[in-house]
Length: 277
Image 1 (cartoon, one colour):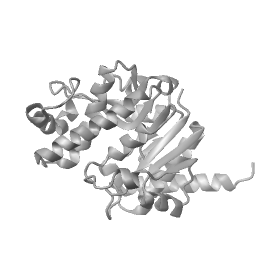
Image 2 (spheres, one colour; image 1 turned 30 degrees about the horizontal axis):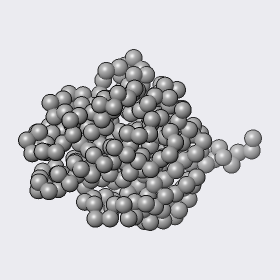
Image 3 (cartoon, helix red, strand yellow; image 1 turned 90 degrees about the vertical axis):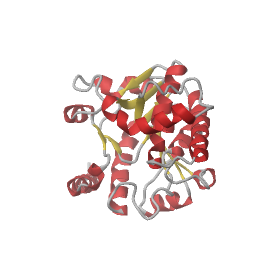
Image 4 (cartoon, helix red, strand yellow; image 1 turned 180 degrees about the vertical axis):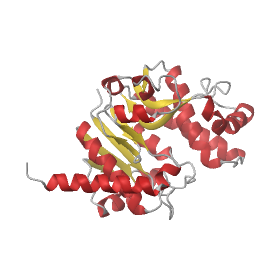
């Protein structure tokens, strides 16, 4: 049963930007809101980051039960467009069941019990509507990735969306990390750089889907938990409300209306915390 939540923050991909958000304030506000609810559902909350990331969260008053700065040395020299590698490292070093939560994911309600008890759990399975994001890199791997593992199935473009990653069985995370490094080395050595920033989709989402199947993990996805999303590659608005789950992606992060909603929610929480019981 998962009782630990983990966040990761590798700051190199930010490099003067704010990982999809308009400003540092907008990023931190989303992180604060996510953290507020995560602390309601989990007994402990960890952060895996680098020195700059530690300074950033401390500057804004975000509190964790543990802050690990391994990414300062582990990620040294790694191309910043391999942006999700730090997340996989954060998963690799955990010593008890955990859920990794992206800083743009908010659990307004407690995750379903089955999600917290499965061997592994993820947001959803990417389906044929997302395949074009993967196709070029997978085609290149099919032709040129000579030492790919047997489970690296280039004929089946399937992947787990990793907005959250839950593991009760921990062993696979270390294998995932090693295979991610192996894929990145192949990609870098090949000189292939078209949409290189999409490499994370392969070594993160595609790889963990096939690796879980290969290791016969019992996997649950959030889309199994609402009739409007069963078998679909997205979370419907109806499901998001009933399950209490939000994952801000792409243009949603830059929407001023979303920024205002997050800010107002934080202000309401702050006022409620000052109201005598």
